[in-house]
Image 1 (cartoon, protein in one colour):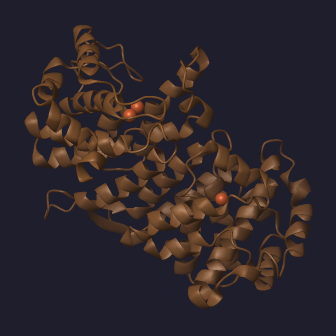
Image 2 (tube, helix red, strand yellow; image 1 turned 30 degrees about the horizontal axis):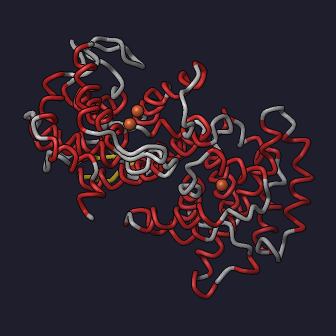
Image 3 (cartoon, rainbow, N blue to C red; image 1 turned 30 degrees about the vertical axis):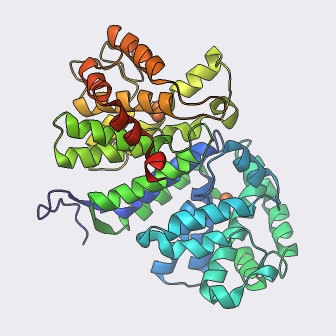
Length: 422
Ligand SMILES: [Fe+2]
Ligand SMILES: [Fe+2]
Ligand SMILES: [Fe+2]
């Protein structure tokens, strides 16, 4: 029987149901679809149901479900997402497979998924089966097949016409046997998708029930803070890849927040957590459409509202992972101001924790000193004047800014880690 307990052997070790992490990743990836959500979850459910139909072991059924959640981990851009859903065989598809492969391959606990993700847009008649092995080739191709089914079904979810369209979707897939998809997998899909239940399980309410069931079957693992940081790095790379405007921003914020934390008496454990919060703080930006995030000029009121909802979206994702309450709170409060005029909760200095205030200052400073495609990082004097003005209005914490200001070269180095490593 599985218990959710905290290990007290190591102060920094958490007992976490790993599916909570996978669900958070999946929720973050869902944001990229803006209003077209749950793509990965539907692919996971369809792949798992095909595996169940084939009589695969419960472990393999679970793995295929997880693979469905993860398969689009290389997609950060809403434009890329649009191409992938709307075009059956988009010629730009391989790029997100390669990014996904690299992200997964670098993290031992998910490295098993790297190869199937790399080949989840490769036709069956082009798959290097000798290199992959039969089982990874089958998994890659089953994800490809169910991914394309979801693309074909996408137009029918919203208007309730899905059950009227299943025959044409099944016929379409049948025609791809031997070219796009393995003939055996096509037979398996046709068999599994004969029932209405297969399709009805893709509706939002059924998805929720399916997720709860899979969560209950999830394995608990011990996760120390260094591994949690590795997971946070995956999230941050997804966000930072979304736009050249945000490249390396999360990384810089994390490293600067840790730097400030050390100089303001934050405990070593909380400094490590602060760094993780820095990596995660902007994951809600995945919900901001590319054209708003990349707009070089001033945002209009509607665009500003969309942009400003990102820290609440960060909260929505992180709050679902038990045991990460403090990290989640600091990350979600990085636009709160000591004077209470920030967002999304309007928390003020009385309840705003030191770590959250540090993250806010680190976020602003990093964004100002980073080079952007349309401008160089701002000169020191401009940064100082701007931040002094924010201090004057109670929008940031003066003592924290003074920590940066007292040793600007060190702050620059922490905020721009890639420069430090050159
Ligand atoms: Fe996909
Ligand atoms: Fe932000
Ligand atoms: Fe940020």
